[in-house]
Image 1 (tube, rainbow, N blue to C red):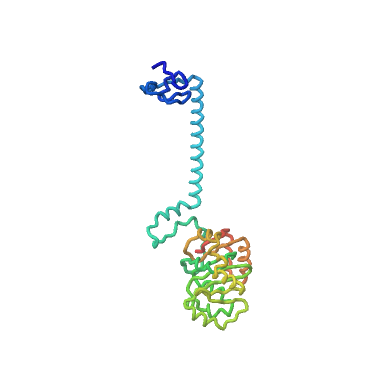
Image 2 (cartoon, rainbow, N blue to C red):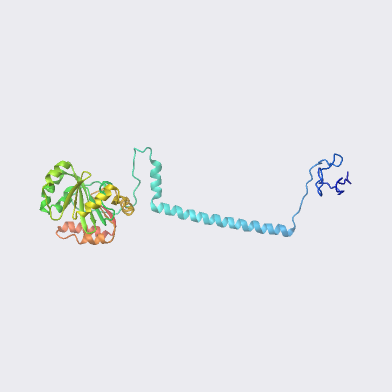
Length: 302
């Protein structure tokens, strides 16, 4: 069947024309069909030029691959270094170590800015969040203490506050907070009994301080307009200091216990504190100057 021809176009059929003519596409008759034989394997040899070209291509590929692997390792190294420097490793370990939602543990703190005062004051646990949620987000200074007797000695210079602060531990819990906002001072104290505090302060008229009970806390400010801003916070139309990301970051650097803490939200807060030392005793002035000279924008007082 080496001389097969297509019955339609008379084309000489080759070895690949099994069932159809490769020229006209005519279906071959049974006598013209070439059955499949064994599979033929053809071996092609590469020329020396082709082999050298492929060798060069593979060598370039290998060099590029090694370069990218090296660059990737350097990149990963920088990421790991950044993570270790920002404390994310400690936070991740803390998250992994939690067993249940009810067992809340704070992540390890980074190096804490702190200073020690030689004063007779009790240490305590800070409750920053419950104070900061009542303070407008734009406050430039925040300070908190765990011994009400200490701040009472400063505030009682105003004789109208004597009924409240003469024996502060009788009427007030130990914690307190203060803030400075747009030229105005404010304090938040914690009544043991709100009704008693309202009775004690009902007839007090002070030319400087304005008082109000807000969320069971005794709030006193030097400008009543601050109460309007706090009202906006309560309505959800204005952010509180607790939602200020810069404040939160600075607070997270501090220990959760101590005698007090100060967080400076901007540079002018340092000047405000320095200009407010008039009338204080020399020991207190010296202690506050230690805070200012420390240079930290957030600090714990021990």
